[in-house]
Length: 152
Image (cartoon, rainbow, N blue to C red; front, top):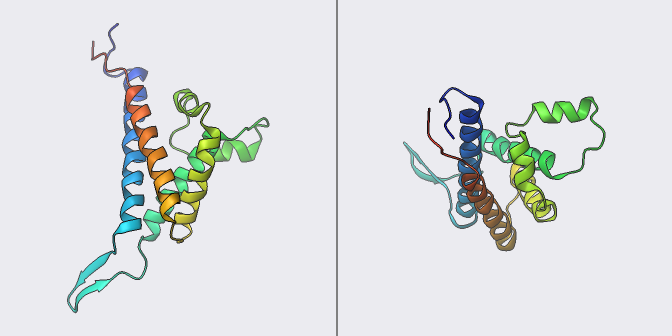
């Protein structure tokens, strides 16, 4: 089966790849938050950072939590709030729902951990391990769903 490079198939592959890389990046960042003390280099010398994450980084954790919530929670009523949630997420195609189907319970503590980090709280070693492993496996699952049949 061949694909023209400008088709929806290419967009699907790139979104799956992007999701996989994003999950693995957040997984890595969680491990660093647990084990690394951030230091900023300033003219006055090296200084420990008071807050581990910037507001933009915290927003990324919140956004991924919101996206996983959309993909794993039951939404039987598609009202305005649902469609706003849908529009606020980057990964909402059928493939992402399918990827997380059957993993809803596994995702709950991960979503809670991501929201905790977004709120500026520090995770326990167990929370970090659970979230990191789930996100890493989700990234791998996403990569395995990519059909690189090539162009043309």
